[in-house]
Length: 412
Image 1: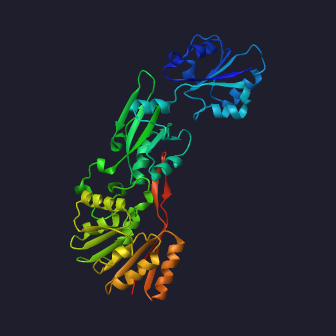
Image 2: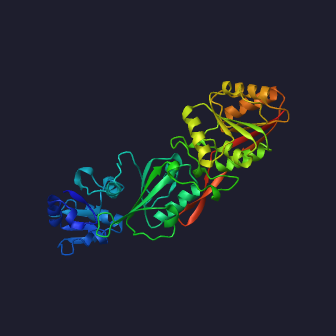
Image 3: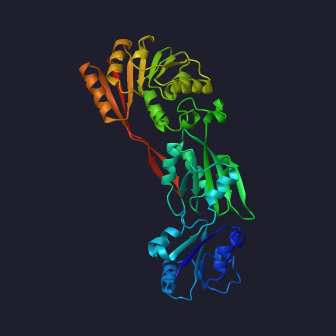
């Protein structure tokens, strides 16, 4: 005896092949949700509402070895794509199951928005948490498709995106009732959909877009603590940027004053340099970055924020530091494995009463820095930073941790 597991879409029987339609027509036991069973209002088979899964599987087991029984289970889309097929394979012998997939909602969604999807990250938030989606967003995944439910709605996903304050920006598509007569596919601004109501059957597609494609309203930005999402960044290197909360602490520790020379070593996206430049337009900030792509990115961010007192320097530290004017303040956000040599150069060039601040993410680099400072008789203090941002979880709120950082502030 074979159990026929038939995928069906919102187009109902019209979407079934003739072969599959004939199998359904011969069924003596028809199992499915209310919506699926309604597609066959005059079918003579015994009907079983697919509500209590245990009861349905027990019924299938009892009928498996009755020769006259033809069992058909109706499911949405592809049974083996976040569907009932996985449970059936656990509970019933695989050789007694035959699957007839329909187009999945993910296939339909990407074809409707005309985007190839072989490289998309598909996440089911149906009856699950948004943890997997949070990780994918923090990683800057280029294409994400989300199967939603009554709790993890498009609105909840929009709230999550805003709460994460990501360096990556996303185009937000909501695809409702795919394949049905009332199908609707919309690309919406995140702010506009926070209180909008959507059909229960929907899929969200998030497509990463470059920040330079989005306008930046300088007048609306705070003077201190620029949002991470306002900077251009490398989507495949989300850790390159010093996060907003850490950036604010660094700016406090470095004790800035007007008309200073500042070195920003391992400048990444230039976020720290740009914060300093906006706060102190009479100071000069040298943003040193070892990759040409990084140097170009820093310059693009300077142009984006219309700051003119940041000088982007392409080169490896410490070699790139030798020709720069003596700094009053130094921030080391990255060392490229040359921390000891960089500190030696800083020791030779930092002006009297200067301040050196490091943001260290690993114990090894912290130990290297502390050993160097002790050998050179510098004074220092440590600030251990372990921060979490609140993020919505359905109708509740929880904390999502940022990577811990040690901020080391040193003076001679």
